[in-house]
Length: 231
Figure 1: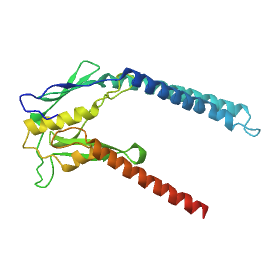
Figure 2 (figure 1 turned 90 degrees about the horizontal axis):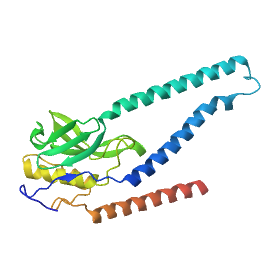
Figure 3 (figure 1 turned 90 degrees about the vertical axis):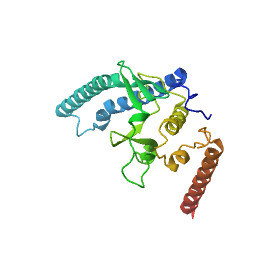
Figure 4 (figure 1 turned 180 degrees about the horizontal axis):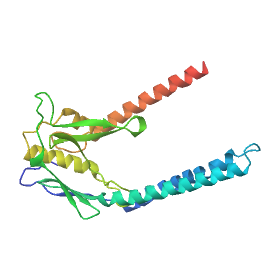
């Protein structure tokens, strides 16, 4: 929905406890399975040639080191995640990140910087990660450095999964156009996140079209691979 600077409302993170619980269960089951494999792996490698006292001593050391490593990881994980984001608010001032430790981090419209490069945009997208872990993120210039703008709670064990990340992003971008019209938003921001630049609503038609094209291309690639194997 299109707003004015006077009617721009506050938008808060919406969460889904059931989805969060499901993701936690799946993750815990997978992690448990992986840990069992790691603990049993040395015993699976034992054969008639390695069935000796020295081998069992090495296995014992392996188990101790693995257990200690897991303990240190969990301890550090718990320590770091006191700063996990549990609520995000987008309003007339910008974004507020409410953390588990009670801190509130602000990303204000007035603090966003303009690029010093004449042909560079001030708000743009970038791809992070590789292959299956790659994702598109929104970037702004803050303290004259690139900063990723997050619209998702950051930890599934200490916070709940947010279900309106898309709406928060759209709301933030509309806020930029209202309160910082001097900033230049790259066209790729709207296309990459399927946002209608006129209404700042989700472009369902464009999204469906892209998904259909991606599906057709995937089917063609699979068909070519299948035919090449069977020829």
